[in-house]
Amino acid sequence: MPTQTPSQNANTGHLGVVMLTLMTAALFLTLRNMPMMAETGLQMVFFNAVTVFAFLVPIALISAELATAWPRNGVFHWVEEAFGTPWGLTAAWLQWVQSLFGITSILSYVAASLAYAFDPKLANERYFIVAVILAVYWSATLANLRGTRASGLISSVCLGAGVLLPSLVLIALAGLYLAQGHPLHLDLTLSAGNWLPLAHPQQSLVLFLSFIFGVVGIEVSASHAREVRDVRRNYPIAVFAAAVLGFVVTLLGGLAVAVVVPRAQLDLVSGSVQALQALFDTWHLGALVPIAALLVALGAAGQVSTWVVGPVKGLWAAGRAGNLPPALQEVNGQGVPRNLLIVQALAMSAVALVFLVVPSVDTAFLLLTSAAVILYAAMYLILFAAAIRLRYAEPDTPRPYRVPGGRTWGLWLVAGTGFATTLACLFISLLPPGGGVAEGVYAPAMLGTLALMIVLPLLLYRWRRPAWANVIGALSPAHGRGNHAMSSDSGINTSPDTHGNGGGK
Image 1: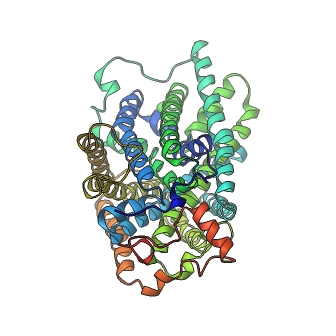
Image 2: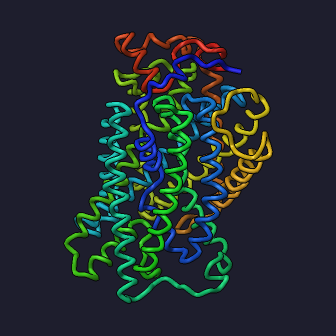
């Protein structure tokens, strides 16, 4: 069992419950998924219930236990404790590399929302999409070089102004729309086929992935566990508060879009702004549409900012254990892995070129989202298995928060449910999503991508050099100042641990 240094238990963090809740919610709370939810009609109630109880709650419970028992940099350390360094590196790599695909799809939504502020036709202009993706992502990267405090402030402001405010306006205006007796576009028929995915199960299952993808990432906030005041108390509170906030806002927002916009006219990428436009036009407030579009784009950009630094800190934690070259272990004066962020931005820029190669924006969006889901599903399978393994391998490690349900059966129920749901999502994501995607090559291409992304970190671990594990402290800016930045801001314990070589088993 690893020993914890005094610094791990010290109450020296600067993040409180409110800030951590907002940063966690900013990882997944967005208006982007509301149109896809609206596409399912009243089935969204069923899909939301499955998503929350079979996926979101298990992840929140597991993350709370692991983050408070091993309050270091998240997925890498948890999986490393359970299965060793190679698989810890693989899990951190999958969490990171999926973000390249997922963030690109989110940024295409930013571009589509911005188009409504200038010219809606730009939403299908590939060069406009790519230009916005690159401009927003590189801006977020530069902002995150200033450290976690700046990232948290950006996330909080963007979440409030760009997600919560437009969502509340959308929900409130939709309620007023109903109260005044305007045409209702949501089928309220009390039949099994209207509430359950019985008529077109394959299409419904593919849409179900948008519900799952809409809540992934809640565990990423664990990368900030060492920066939280009284982490063993405040982290579980923040995670569950973010989960409840996300569930309520997205469900009500999805219902609002479905009420206002006819399903046949719904745009799956920019449908939330489309719904706001319809509501504003109802009361002759069309001049507010560009403002609303800018705010929605701001909210999505804030989500991108949060994703810029979260997964890369997990990969950096793996690198500090001797699994990345010294150049990629460097940090600046704020404890931010500067070089790794730049490499990430270059890689994401290359992924963005998909929009220039694939025939349509919608097809590129579907492919990027599908790739992100498949890679993230593989990471979650490893994570759920690690949680179960650690209960048996290290039963005496203090767990200030423990998944309820006795010593093991509750964990098996929670982690088993999450594992089964994730495995089902992995298989569903191999179904062609439509939109002009070639059916014959889609599944092999996705499986090939998954296999490649699992093999790469294993090869990286095999080819690592002993000198890579001997650079802790040597790369710190101004030595003492850098060590302080890393131990307090980045969450990495720079003192030797029981694993040796910076944490590798």
